[in-house]
Length: 166
Image 1 (spheres, rainbow, N blue to C red):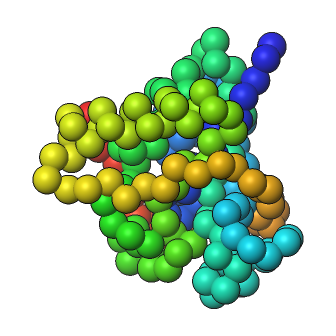
Image 2 (tube, rainbow, N blue to C red; image 1 turned 120 degrees about the vertical axis):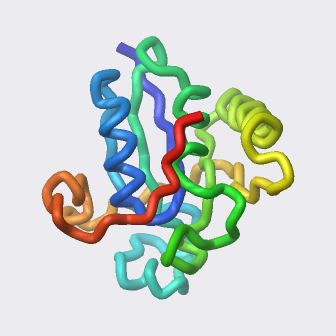
């Protein structure tokens, strides 16, 4: 089985992971939450939350492209949050909550740009998508207690989501 990685930032990583697992677990995806896109090596949660590291809270997905396409994951990513707000999702504010697609290949970049244009045209006319589409750098795993957090803590903080399947 050949797998690929997809990395998305869409606000609080607990909610992003939870909703992707809910809809794609049957496709065999594997997830982990962490930090990407910043300046500090090996950042911790407190440092990321402070905004000083410039990292985004993100979800890294390992998937089999024969079971689910990268384009499907990108389209779904857009439906899980508001990609028209800069550095904010619901009550969460700061660059760590930005909307971003971290691509792992030129093909992923092309697909992300194509799907972004389609979502803009079909679903968000009159509102500009501000999602960054940038190369994936080093992904730092978040602390163990963050992994699959909402599954392990079902009555815990409910991350804001703007889930709206097209």
